[in-house]
Image 1 (cartoon, rainbow, N blue to C red):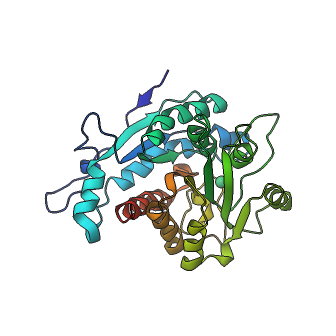
Image 2 (cartoon, helix red, strand yellow; image 1 turned 60 degrees about the vertical axis):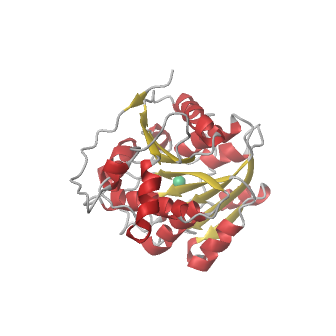
Length: 312
Ligand SMILES: [Mn+2]
């Protein structure tokens, strides 16, 4: 049974000559036509708990919305940006059970029909267990998919007692019996927080990784250019340096600077192969002055900017 809760977010002030995103979303959706973009919250952190991390990411979807709804449409491409927002459907947050496997299957069920009709899907997580549910939106319909994960860690850790968690999402996708995961790239890795065994796992499965120190705008473009087919992109906020994203389940020092991160978000929207994305591991409990929530909101904003500029 699918259940959604409506976001608990007070809309910001708005004005005709200074409209804000929260007032534009979904205002021109017509019955029978697929939304151009679908937003959905996955308020889960049980996978973080299982992984021994700091819980709190379950509160992220509404904190991200709170910051996103205050932003303006893209001032550089105003009309097109407004049009995209007016055709964006916010489904709210999926009502979860804290049974991670069941919740992930539920997320897959919610996403599959939207992915099938060609809406661009943006999932607001949740811990990184969000991404295995996201993957099921493809795998449950036998749709092969590539995955690009922006993260300090590759998240291919072993299961614990046969159970998945926030650190195992991509091991589960890569080993999934459907074979639906046909490409995996982890980008932004930090050698001081990555187990060598996980790099060996990637190599053994034909997956690629890129260290954070090797990233530049050109390298990021090249990574997007290497996507071989329909793909989803995962944005783990812990890939960004802790100074700029203090509200993360598992923060890291030496992470990606904000300008490169937002470029990666923009390219996700711009790149035709990319069909969906998720923003995960934002943790409001540890955030300072909403810095990580604002960063997560700006991540979504840059994906939307890229969508406006996407060449069809
Ligand atoms: Mn992660």
